[in-house]
Image (cartoon, rainbow, N blue to C red; front, side, top):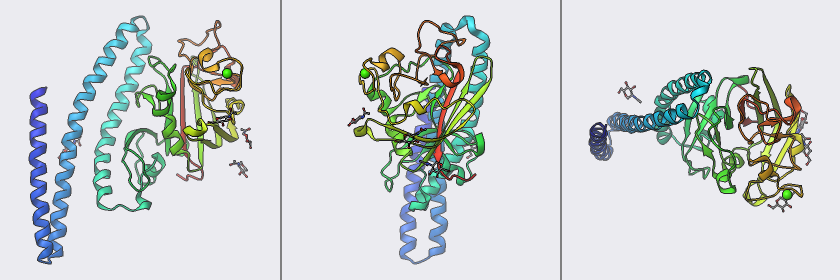
Length: 341
Ligand SMILES: *[C@@H]1O[C@H](CO)[C@@H](O)[C@H](O)[C@H]1NC(C)=O
Ligand SMILES: *[C@@H]1O[C@H](CO)[C@@H](O)[C@H](O)[C@H]1NC(C)=O
Ligand SMILES: *[C@@H]1O[C@H](CO)[C@@H](O)[C@H](O)[C@H]1NC(C)=O
Ligand SMILES: *[C@@H]1O[C@H](CO)[C@@H](O)[C@H](O)[C@H]1NC(C)=O
Ligand SMILES: [Ca+2]
């Protein structure tokens, strides 16, 4: 494995050097005022760059694979008695890995395209922008760093299928091995695995919802039934404003169980910003826009097989299954208001 990596790196360096040489020649031919030849040369530089990016991504792919394998082993040890469910997870995992490889090829092309022509209207700041640029496969995408928008590089999961696509997923619960009982800083920057369970991060959610946004919440219970809740307007404040939630215009069939959390600040186990004498984040064991305390608790504890009558700290949505039923699967996703597929 190490030898392969070294070879890849060596090859990458060689390609970079070649690219440099070409660039130099490109400059010379520009001086000689031969625009046609210069154009052709830049094409080749770009194609070399793509190949370097390709190798880098292959290398990344290898180490990511190792990491995933390790995680799978841990999962097996922990969940031996729940093999059926695990198989199901693995199929999902494999499916998304496959679509990720497809996506990656496209992202590499996209990035080289970006460095070639960069104007504000070309900016990629969410999955909706990718969708309008004809990226139609659901999976992981890398939103490039953008000087113009002042945004860092960010790995996101795009749902390009549900109800017209263009959704940037901000939260997912489905595997159940990642704890969501985390502190302020972790909720700020995000945690978990973009293809498994994760919170994208309050700073990123703030940034995404600076443009007027819709939020869609999809829920599944342990019988396999699904429901959804959509809010035609969703935004959160910045950190100075404690990521305060603002919502409007509910629709769906799951019940309006985020309304109770409207106009509340975000709380975590080390920052009690709720509207209650109690410390809701500690009682409900998650980070959320706790009021006093919940009508939903999508960042609560993952309980297998739903019922957990002892505590009200599960992944709950009172409008559908009440306060003691912990859901099997949740996804929260956003896209701009007025997005037309
Ligand atoms: C790398 O490029 C080769 C062709 O040059 C292509 O067959 C392969 O799919 C690419 N792989 C990735 C991960 O981009
Ligand atoms: C809610 O929907 C109504 C009717 O479509 C619209 O006029 C209003 O602006 C929406 N509210 C927000 C906050 O987007
Ligand atoms: C929310 O937090 C801000 C400061 O971040 C504070 O000024 C405001 O009073 C809080 N609002 C509520 C409803 O607790
Ligand atoms: C949330 O509160 C605002 C007022 O601050 C209100 O306009 C809006 O309709 C509320 N949203 C819901 C879903 O009730
Ligand atoms: Ca409190």
